[in-house]
Length: 170
Image 1 (cartoon, one colour):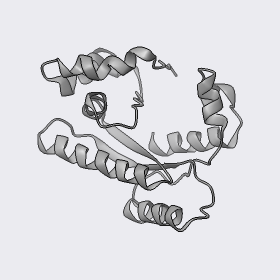
Image 2: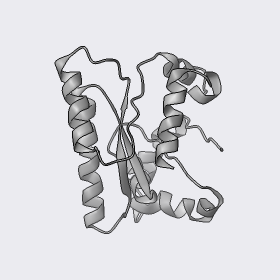
Image 3: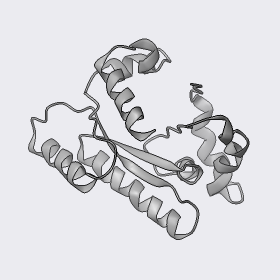
Image 4: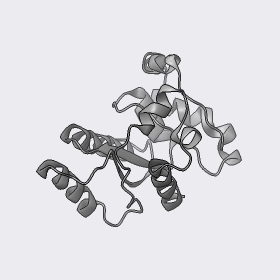
């Protein structure tokens, strides 16, 4: 496993990409020489729809949409799926949707959280992701240290949940 973490230069990616010709396929071209060296390349993007997100989608063969238990995240996930359909219709990608990953999950104590969980489970029941990522501060603690949960908390329940997700999609 190789891990290249993002840094402050990533914030400039949108601006740099906006000036490029064929800007939606820059990342795909950059990854071409190394694709055969890895079983899986995971590209984690910020939760925004911008040139970096478009590049990640067009460079990918498959994608997962993380979604926390809020209406904003749910609507954001729908926006990403609409974007992918637009990119497919223009021939920019053949990427396969693997599912929505519910993050920050607690036994829902609100009607809205239950509704979001149920809609996603019903809508995407045939997709491989069934694991719910539990709510925990451990992910934020690891990020604050510049580490992944796998590095900082290898035996924690959140790390085990992410491992189950990885196994289900690879």
